[in-house]
Length: 107
Image (cartoon, helix red, strand yellow):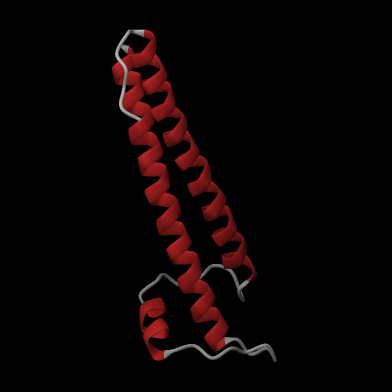
């Protein structure tokens, strides 16, 4: 496998990972909104009608309450950050490789 093919594969995998992380974060946030609005605990929160309408379009949560979705939101955050770091590192590697070959990339 050539270096360019490998580089492209790394970029594609990381970009897909970022997109999936954002989708998971969005789903977790919707679950938090929905579960907070229907919670029977004393820590009930007020949620706007618009937020409730958006949250209604998500799948039924497998977790009860907001604890599971809160954890999922945090995991999605760190997953996105890790994938963005891979993209940044791959970009820097490509610039360094071009510099070694005598081509000076624009920063």
